[in-house]
Image (cartoon, rainbow, N blue to C red; front, top):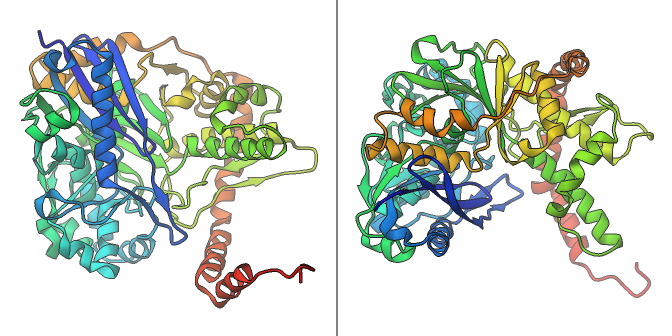
Length: 539
């Protein structure tokens, strides 16, 4: 009997395959670390071949954990990291490495295109502010600086689309990424005005067909069956982008008015579900509007380029220092210390802007040169104070993003590994001034994808029926915000927002300095000095 659904979630740092029964209970999971490369030019790239190999390996490993997995699998669904550019050429071979959402090389094209007359019409169609993460901006930059990449390509895919291609042999994308990148969120189709605004009308041939994974599946191909251990012909559903799938699995839409979902993953995602007719686009032209796998509904979203990446950075700093003076310690070994550090520090002692990504920030403002920083440091502060400021910075950034979309949530559903921290949840609740609930769902992204497959094969009549079974029962109790802490953060937020406005020219100046350091004469002098051998006297 086919009683298992498999959800694949290919993130930036890990590829997961998760088995669920038809009622939404998690049966088993497998995960393999993913890796990417960064360069001083702002590049962030990932190997397409290795990503597929890792995906196939997770499925094989899942087969070792679930008895008779191949014959019991009713369907497979795949989601993955959003944005980025995964180019495919002849015979479905990769054209170079993928440009990830972290890649900042498209910054000049973003600045140029945002100054063009068609910038606002493009935003009105997509509902999405242009930034360096997106395939449209990246392809515009490729067209300007690396046209040979696009000349060699036959199709431009995203991460999940690439995995779907390997699973089925079909080149396609989903309505969510298609409409915010090159389309219109109202029609869920490509839009010629958007292509013209991006200067990519002549590259129209690279855009794949758009399919909805709740309505159509494709059979697992022979090569994929051999690589994964699953049966040829197993139905495969192309999920929506991971941000939508995670929000769906975590409870962004359960019918409760005013509820919202924040995902504290590598990036920070803040979502509200709305009917298409109720979407209000801001004057600043920022944020995303993303199709949901429900008719007439979209998620309006603001995203921080980095969320848990800020915490990871702090843990790496601590691990490096400890390792230098004692036994080697991995950053992950220090995760258990986060709550004690937060408990040992005073609330509101420092301000921190969590713009740690080398790609800058994209929500609720777009600035590729934005960078993280502490404000208010003195000799009395210790590491625990800085760690608390980093977590408070994530809370204030969340408030900043929801403020750009209108009212604060009436209830906030939290997802992502960092949501396991009680102290972080307390800070988040206080910053948005609303109760927080955490879903017991361990793998929300994979679950959201599997829910699409469940609807596609007819296990549920529609997505609302699937949500009632898979999502609503798993929402935990509401954790109310602390009034005193809420008052403190309400007083800090104006300073937080004002500081990020005032720091903009500083970020621009630092960007110029970085550019000169990397490409200017001084870089060559420094390189020569570094290469020159030292004499015995050190001269």
